[in-house]
Amino acid sequence: MLGLKLPTDPRWVNIVEKNIEEILTDHAYCEQKAATNAITVIVKFPMYPDVVEAMGELVKEEMEHFQMVHRELVKRGFQLGYERKDEYIHDLLAFQKKGGSKEQQFVEKMLFGAMIEARSCERFRLLSEHISDPELRVFYRELMESEARHYMMFLNFAKKHATSIDVDKRWKEFLEYEGQLMNKYGKKETIHG
Image 1: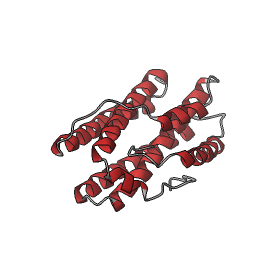
Image 2 (image 1 turned 90 degrees about the horizontal axis):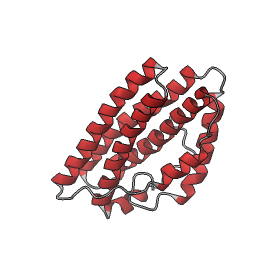
Image 3 (image 1 turned 90 degrees about the vertical axis):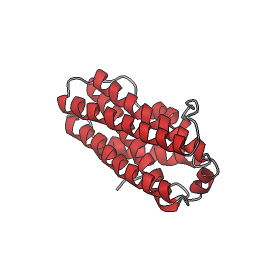
Image 4 (image 1 turned 135 degrees about the vertical axis):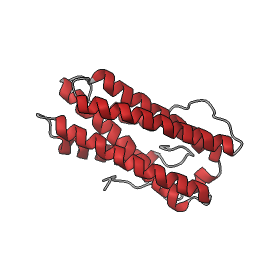
């Protein structure tokens, strides 16, 4: 369903299990950044009322997820650390086409969002199936389903509002790029790293 070209090696979960505090802190900030991204979409693309409505709901949901992850940290006796730079996101941003028409910018933003949600969904699935902590298995299963919905939402909005852009072609380019990119990731206890 996700179309990812290079799956994460399941042994990534072994790296994660060595530092649960780090993965939860990174995850919390991923949720916060997803909310921020949705706000940016509202500000940049107010001409799409359906998108504005959906992004408003997404902001609330992502911040609820942030709170869920924060509660999980506190419950385990951990503390939310400082935000880390997300190299994966930086690399995806480098691939985005800059400038162009407002439609082109919108499609790029939607595909960028879809890509992040797809990879997060894939990583959450791995955690839900392979992490030894039974509570975290359930936790990540629930979040995986939500990431899958978000992935489809971004992709569907790109297709719905693009009138002069071949979204499927551009999405394939995103998938190919991200597949090559993933050769250098999967070695850290972070959601995308």
